[in-house]
Image (cartoon, rainbow, N blue to C red):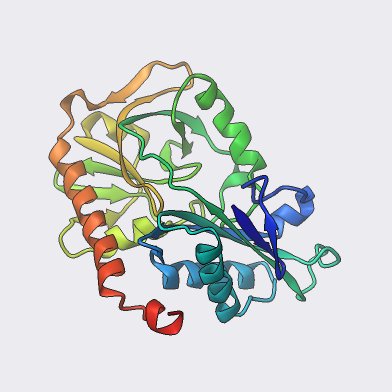
Length: 285
């Protein structure tokens, strides 16, 4: 597929958002990954808002949203992409990685759809403070190091903890069903509050809350699931410790809780696409 890089369309030989970037430039670059369904971006407004917020936080000049949307529409047409995903990356110019608030480089990378994983296994791991961040940075070195043991053991991902509290995985937020409540760790600066998480928290038909969830509370959890805006709701089958000893399993899981959340997510996406209340088609026919 073709990718958009700073005003030019190039044949893509990689979907990496960090290819060719130094570590210092990666740390001052942000991105967002958005699902494409029926040739339409899902939750476009929310993605753009977060992208611009993150750029402001690291003192990089925001990119004009019209430029992003025009490149997005052009990329969908060039790649004939009906379903899939797009990564929008904004980096400082090559000579602006020193922190000055100046020109920025926009890239869009398009991909075919990814299969939805079945119930997954996660491995608990203490996350260093250096990796705890509410900004979606391109730099992922700390997370990659934290996830290595989990991936080597065949787990889907690492489930980060800090001082006995659950945080998130490297690509998803986590929800734990305790009683009748779907609890997710609060956005206190230690997690990246994902768009799927925010949509489920705002849904009227789910009893969700932002509260600290301790690892010890998993013993009484009826269900655990993780979320992101590309893959939606992913049920968790098992959680293990660093020693691969089981901490929680879905044997006693109430599958209805997970399915209710998944059904809610599907409705939210369908409403976003079918209602087209963002006016995307009118702006970019």
